[in-house]
Image (cartoon, rainbow, N blue to C red; front, side):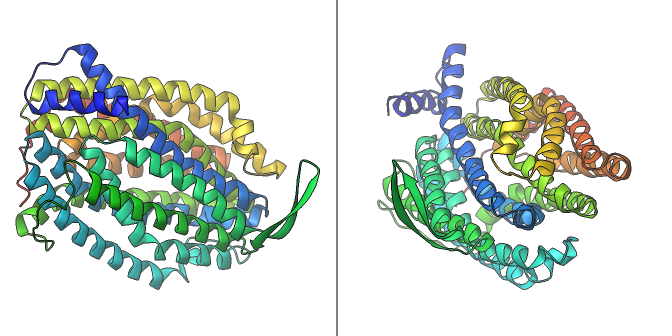
Length: 477
């Protein structure tokens, strides 16, 4: 709580136009980054839990989830983009000390994003049956993959509200509640998965034999356990946002929930490029899955485990990016461009430092990281080899992640979206298509490593130019 109080005091310096020393800027960046990093890591730990529990059921069960991973990320990315269009407005308005305007945006965001997620849910339900076959999955995994995706998509509205509420809290500078609740979600996922994936069995604890109930649902149990954890967390996140947040709680005044034209226009200006980028980027990742699928069940499973393991290393970068978005949004909202530039440099360098360290850890600990998720020797060996290729890309990957967070905080999303999709489609997919027939899965991951380094370079180049700071304060109501 002392850290939260200190962060709030430093954020007030930004909003009130007071000078900040380099030490204060570094302190605030760390105060906001650490809880956000913990929240990001908790979401990946949850994926680790699903992967390791399902991995014990065999390579086919793992591959059925791995086949759908890029599509689930597409739908989650669309929800995240929709939420960001509103939360960036709130960050700008709070930076300009317009609390009433920020609350007005929040009310409109709740209705707009919920409606959007329900539309996505309807689309997902319609395609859940044939989707695994479209992605090139074999007959041994398509049924489980379809059930897994259907359960996931039905939980999407809860995921949308959870993302919106946590994004709004972070925009106000409150990184601690989202972090704590996401860690709780991780623990709930363990409990629900334990009860739903495996059948009733006997466990040995201290020489005692204890019966442990279970539903024995397998892959479907993993999806259902995660969905239940998301629903509980979303309810608590909304409660803290709407009833406890000093800046954004909705109990002190009333206003319209129906979105206004200006609020939607501002949201679309930010969200539409991000949403299109997520669609194109995830489309590229789906194409990567299509490239990997003919390599066989072992390659699909190893690819899925490698992606999950690598995410432990790059999620700290996304935590720093969340802090960068808040700092950039509030600094620009307060009209302090030079301070915005300094926060951009601090956060990018911090992200690169953290992920360089994590890349070293990933290279050394690759056998342990993959081994936790699968007992299959062939999957383990292939997963370790691709993970070690990717370790070399982590510093420049961090540069692109955090710089993108800076641009989002400034409301500048169109050009970065174009840069992302050109890098993904022009470099990664082209190289993966050329290398996969000769090098197998290692060729696909080598293409990924080269592309991420290229992406980091072009994002640093844009960050240095400064044209991303041209956005003005949003009018929320």
